[in-house]
Length: 134
Image (cartoon, rainbow, N blue to C red; front, top):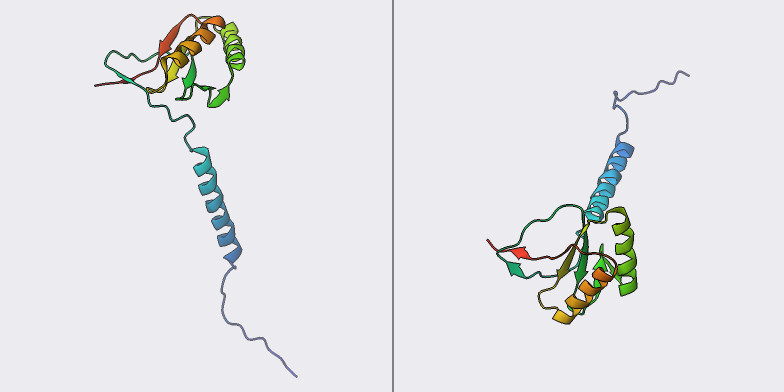
């Protein structure tokens, strides 16, 4: 008995696993860059001023929300934590410019308290952040 195989032509390599891997990588990068590019920060609506000036890059930013809570680098801090973080940065750069970003609806008392905490930590170069009117 002579059995012969029937050849159906050369179909090439199976690319289904490669398509699965590429699809997985595509989904991975879409999710990674969506999470990576999510904006960080607080929703603080700054007051407007015509005379605002851009400041140097060597700075320390403190945000104050409507409730009077203080934030450094997006993290809520207490007065003691603010003084400690600022004191550590001031040891490295004593002439560092400290910017207070206060919501335009925040009570004046909260801004003054924040400025007091900054001054007690040794910060003497202070500024209030505003959105510049054109």
